[in-house]
Amino acid sequence: MKSNAMIPTKNTIVRIGLIILVAFIMTMLSGCLQNYGRLNRDTEIQQAFESNQVPPEYEYFFFGNPNWPYAVMGLDRDYNLRSRIWRGVEPDTDDFRHMTRFLWADYNYYPYGANILDPQGQKIGIIYTSSWMAAVKVDTDSKTVEVMPYIYLGGP
Image (cartoon, rainbow, N blue to C red; front, side, top):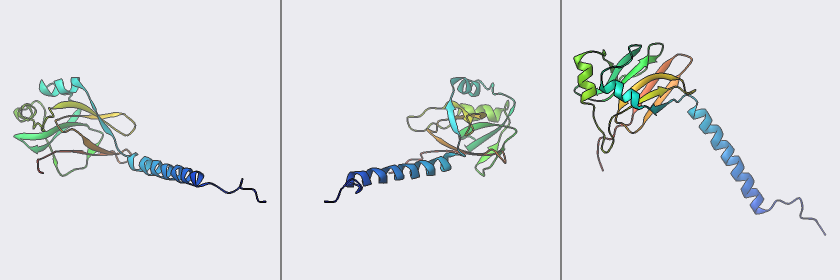
């Protein structure tokens, strides 16, 4: 009579397969997410934009129509913005005050301030937007940043 101790059961094969699948997904996700930063909401940043008392150490940009922008962002001067949609704006100007006063508000989302963090959690800028999320891609070697707020413009 032969022993069945060395023959794997169907449950064992399924478990091993799931472990391999989870390990593969985790490896892929860690590789995909290594260059992405995030936004960290901060009411002090919101108040700074609303009172036009933004920190002078940042270079400022806006995204959208100057009369009704989607977002206004300040970026650490050590970083380069990689984008064709963001345009520069000087703080302490009438244009800047107008932009922060008439910032576009997404449906059920109201303007908020946030810190822009690199993948290691270090602050590299600030943003004022009503977008409910944004992709923040950072290349720490070349010190380039891409920020893309998600804007819902209606539709089915």
